[in-house]
Length: 113
Image (cartoon, rainbow, N blue to C red; front, side, top):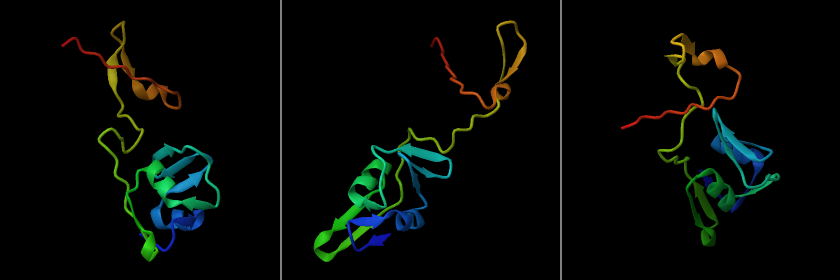
């Protein structure tokens, strides 16, 4: 995406990138990223690219800025959906992770090796 200024209005940014900005988050599909601060109607491309992880190349002398697609490291997940795990509980009965649907769940995995 090419821009003629280092700042852009929020609506144009959302249309160009697919990211939706509200409160202190940026969301695209199932991925949401917390932002350092709530952004107003005008966005600074340097700041927003750093917060979301979008590469930015700027050539202010020629009034050109380009914003690339998001580059997520290997630590990012594409969704917060877990497969339906079925494991025995402490008494040997079948337990389905899906039985906790709608609740916050911490899955702790441990192996002695």
